[in-house]
Length: 112
Length: 114
Image (cartoon, rainbow over all chains, first blue to last red):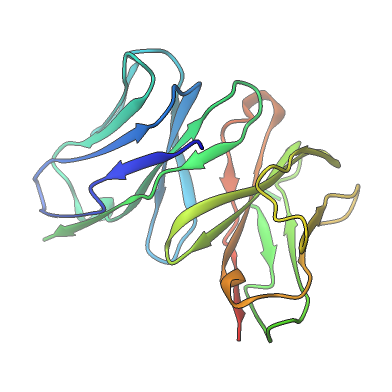
């Protein structure tokens, strides 16, 4: 079946260090989304990537979609305590269905 | 409203009892999605609606779960004869038809089955 794996499961970093989470799909994706969920909160949409090799930036966050559209990454430069939370990727397997398979998430803890 | 509203915030049911959860999507949004999150991770897609029509229900365990989105009413997710493994946070999300992929999530309903 369609699966989306995400690594690492947990990451503790010192404030100011960089952070990266990786998302891998067993099959080719139509698109991929990234969400952030703060502790006790709900997921907040960050971005969607659609094109092969696409790179998008949001301030300190850089999102990449692999050339084969089977993997993606989220990189945060110079983490801040406000970056704490769990980052989820969500893979869309068929264009137009709006059904997303969520990855297992990476829980980021930033130590001040 | 500008936020997805979900009620109740918490729900406790004995095993075998019925549970009903409600979701009011953002005004003007055409799509509604239900997800189940267990153990702080493991989001599972359940069902999506386009207005009052089921759009995709491939994630629904149909024998006990049902969902509706009727005009001028909150959407609902109902679980008949709850089981212990149904304990989870149920999130509803909505999106606008022009940016259907950009889902706005509600605060969730925590269901505890004892």
